Length: 101
Image (cartoon, rainbow, N blue to C red; front, side, top):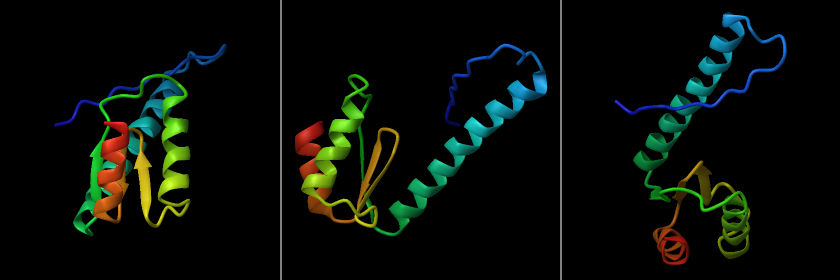
């Protein structure tokens, strides 16, 4: 089983346990949805490349700009879920790996 971690910052007046539970439930649901989408895309022949972690706050922006410029802006040929990137074409996954890993 995969361990899921979540960050939630409380605002003034957010001492209600239901509010906190709802926030965490939403975060966990998004993680589950992402995992399902990744599995479905893999089953449909997409290639997966996972980055261990982003170096800084600019890193994911630089990667997205590179993907848009190099591969194309269409999410029909590449997509990402956090640090997991998926590519419709094998050569795009290879280019990405050579550039970012």
